[in-house]
Image 1 (cartoon, one colour):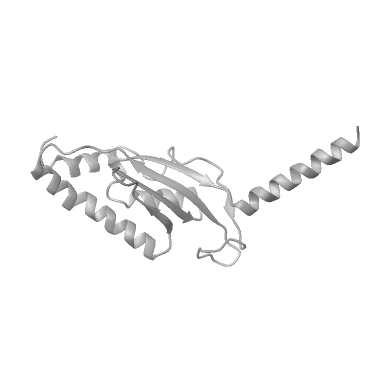
Image 2 (tube, one colour):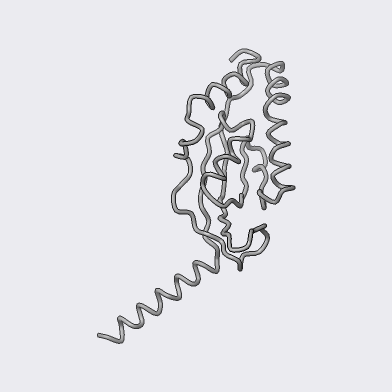
Amino acid sequence: MACGEYPDTLLSKATQQDDAADTRHLRKHPFELTDGAKGHQQQEGGKIMRYLVVGSGGPGFGSPEEAVEVLDSVVLPSFDELVQLEKKKKIVAGGLPVGDRAFVFIVEAKSNDELDNLLRKIPMWGSLDWEVTPLQTFAARAKQERQSVREYKKAERKK
């Protein structure tokens, strides 16, 4: 890749997909956090979902000049966007695995669409591979497991 191609490549990847409809990288039916969850901003009656997000891959650099251009035009603005998302409490935790070219963070969003829009605003969106995993709260899972135990015990008594 020649110096200066990276931003054009990023743009062309982003425009090849339908911005409104492409949510293939988001898994469906995320688990929801309710009013009992702490550490997020929530409107009254609204539900917030947490997602584990990993952005990895991306091109390497062919020359020091290309590295400077890509870092200045795409990578550093991506860090700036991620810092802003942390300040807005949309990213509640995260960072970079030491020595790796990847982002790992937990996002709070009201829907898959909100998360998709948030990710698309990160300048590196079109050049990274994204893996998004909806997270279930510990309390919600404990509630499910307690219900399962009750059902198993009830079935056992009927024998």
